[in-house]
Length: 181
Image 1 (spheres, rainbow, N blue to C red):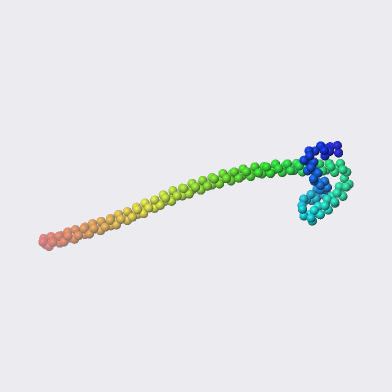
Image 2 (image 1 turned 60 degrees about the horizontal axis):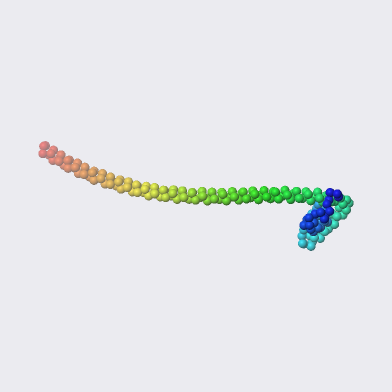
């Protein structure tokens, strides 16, 4: 008990907070063998269950000396405080990680938008080039077809001319053969 300081040595705000906690519930929640007692609720049935559990715990705690009870209470409070500190550190770490991840998501979203923009730009350039090449190919195919048609036309005219010349020569050869013979 010498380790415990009197309540007057505690700061007023801490003393008010401690005084506002029902000692029975605090002891009952922290004592071994007392589970689920420190439930805070406005529901009447829950309050009744808490008081019933607190009574059962108090009867269990009745066999524990006052010094041992306070020692258990202080040990449990210190343990809870350390757990709370660890939880706060974990929460802060998780919040930092969340912040980093959100920053990374924003960065990757910006990169994704830029890549999509560049891809759309390249697609437009490709489609324009393809349309230009298709138009050029059609133009070339049309010119080739026209050239083939002219060539065929020229060949037909030449063939006709050569055929007429051949007939004329054959006719003249026949005349000459008739004269000479």
